[in-house]
Image: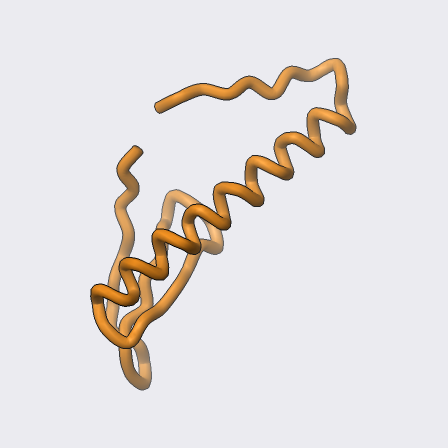
Length: 71
């Protein structure tokens, strides 16, 4: 899957990058390349946490199904 990210100059130095499709997923780097590398790691971490939360919800609500889909 491909995500769009927003890359902007930091207030003091470097770059800040965020992924609007994943709430709270923000990273930074001294260069554009570093910021983009860092946001990939942050996105993977955020998605892992969201998946863990979905699994916990499944345990709390056994009558509901959590279904995996590929997009």
